[in-house]
Structure formats: structure tokens, C-alpha cells
Image (tube, rainbow, N blue to C red; front, side, top):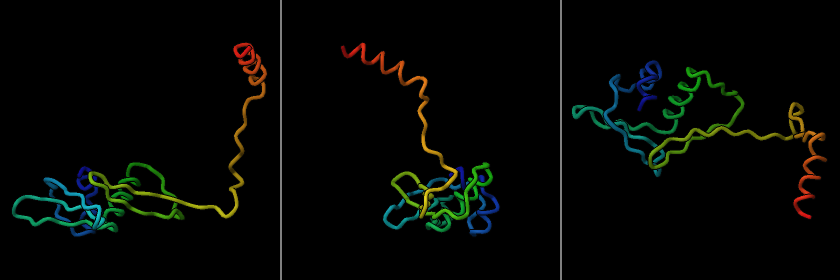
Length: 118
């Protein structure tokens, strides 16, 4: 619920009440979260699009960089909402170098291990 309180502009854009929700119910089957406000207000469902908007807005304000070309999905669990980012490469990115093991340490560790095995 903290994310709703911290996202004033997004909350207004989504047409949500400006007050802090008093509770929330997670509905994984409907892929939504139902925000509960005071007794005078009726429960307000947030579907996946609104949940994504709130979470992405929060990430941007928190300084978490999100590349635009990523595929996004959202999952509602029993007690959490998970924002999933994924990407796929047709060709391996040239900026990723293969992992390199420092060769200076290998002989020493090998001798040490060989001594223990003998």
C-alpha cells in the first residue's frame, strides 16, 4: 500500500481516491488487487495495467532504470504483486564478455587440491 501513498500523480491519473487504503486483497485468479478504503468507500479493484503503472512509476522515482525495450508482465500472488521484465537476444550481445578465471590462481589451487586428494 506504500506504493499507492507514494504515487500521488499516478493515483490521480488512475482515478483512485487520494486517501491511504486501509487494506488490500490480492486476487491471483483475476490478476488484480482490491484496495480497501474507509467504510464509506467501496472496494477499488486495480487490474494489471494499473498495477504496472504504479510499480513502474515507483521504480522511476526510486532511480531504478527500466529500459524501454523490455517485455513487461505482471503477476499477482496471494500476498504480493510481481513486476517481471524480460528480454531475448537473437545474437549474443557484443558487450558481454565470457567469464574469465584468473589463471595465476589455478595452478596453486590445483596443487593444493591434489595434495588433499592424495
